[in-house]
Length: 380
Image 1 (cartoon, one colour):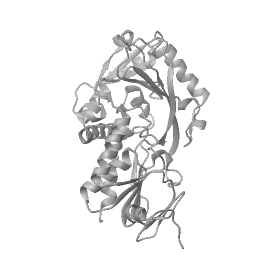
Image 2 (tube, helix red, strand yellow):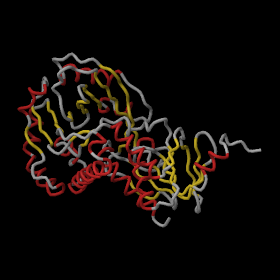
Image 3 (cartoon, one colour):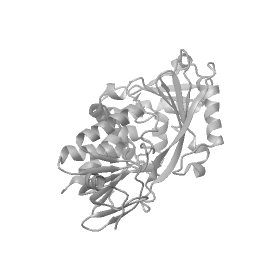
Image 4 (cartoon, helix red, strand yellow):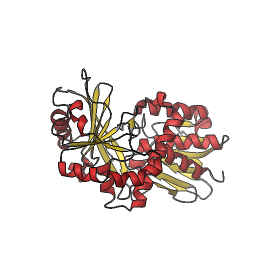
């Protein structure tokens, strides 16, 4: 007698005759699943996610619709070629347009309030300011916008900052509601006929030449014709030979602040810190550069070192005159590497992957998901 822990109905409906099993139910996995069902309606597509919710980065990110602040791009150019850096900018831009087109601005609460980079060093501010013509020359033709960046130092007082020496705005950036985005994606996946199975943590995948055996932490082995790994920051156990590392991003959000002046998305210290308004609250995250070794983890958690720094920035630089109180703190896991280009490739005959979003999941997740769906669906 075999006891799988499932009823006949559950096994028959959810786990039999799977054509594509997608491991990871975040932005990439759901977009891949939706694209597969759109192109191949008869395929049985199942998304396996280890959490009750998609709790990697997709449902825990800050909701930034960003594609590159001057400081971060200029820093990337120190270790990446021009073609790589500006190709990524183009992909992020195209991904954002795809996200908005697929889900609708109203549904995801999109606002084009600008993306600002703030500087507490006059030297760094002027270095970036001097490079704006160079950035426009390379970026404007890619996204079809003549003026992307502007000097915004005159707005420092309006936002109520303290200790900020300069500010540059990206006029084409905005923000979304991450929770609404994930809700709409999940609804679209269900409507397309995708099976979503939560609390299914995959520990191992075996390519058997004519099928794939997927071993969850608990429960029976799942058999599928093909598998697509979309686990980003949790990918190392499944893809031990690929250059991707998990990094924790710690975040806090304030209680509501009456008459909050802040509006838009903001980057500080080459993007290692980021903050925005969420209604009349302030969301602030980052700080992994304070201790790369400790934050190189796929475990959720908070540290005093990072949280104290976030508290200091919130109280003394971002909102020094409003005395903000912290309402919640959390963390998410990013998939990063020395190369910021996503990894989208076959792993073996029937196993594929789409990982390493570089902390830009909102920007490129839709595009990467569709590319991955196209790749895994060929020949089925």
